[in-house]
Image 1: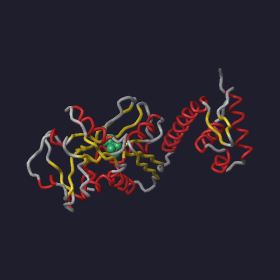
Image 2: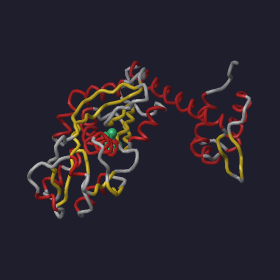
Image 3: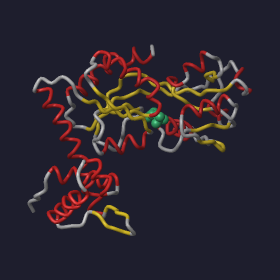
Image 4: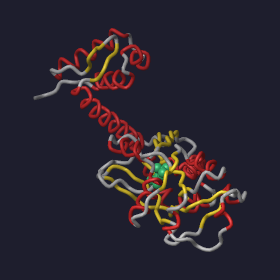
Length: 304
Ligand code: PGA
């Protein structure tokens, strides 16, 4: 079968699918709504299958539409990569950098970007912060230029380059009886304590669960919060203990509102990684950010 589809159709389709709306796609692309409908109609005719279904005035992707959506996002992203690359070949130095970082990496990633941008003021960038689960989905769709995350993906064919230690420690708040404990406790003793956990999908949470599982220990009635900031507040309020990245608690340690609890076998020693899909052709801007992070990332982050 030879497909006779155009980039314009792909762009229109991608926008309609993203907004679930012909009207909003028309606005985004500065087209009229009939022009958008026409592009979609031609695309569906070319493919010989419906991509959208209309139910009660709403539109939904069909199964074929869903499949085609993944493909069109990959193609758009690759086109953008190539455009960046060609710009550099033509001697254009500016470019766009699209970085995605794990929530916890945000404690140093903004600082890294700030230094990088100071050196390359002509570069524009976007930085998105999200949890591990969403990072993996974006990586799999090859959306970001580079991802900064803890544990590299196991299922995905990706390149992961470690650039800095990420020690995970247990913290305790001032009002907790263990705040004054000066001798190490055993992992088993942790079992008697209540833990405050990050949301499902968080890399830090998974690390804690594995730490317990490996020792055949159980987490007793943990409480769950969706961000490191709330976790720290909860620990300070005496709600329980938490496992956090040492990068997130510098200010609280200085202010002596949190302490690192000494526990045998802790900290969990992990690394921060720069990750991208295997075979991805990094744009010159992304390549230069990669080099910068590998060369200077750990020094800049620790001093931040
Ligand atoms: P987070 O951490 O998902 O808990 O923010 C990142 C990681 O450790 O992978």
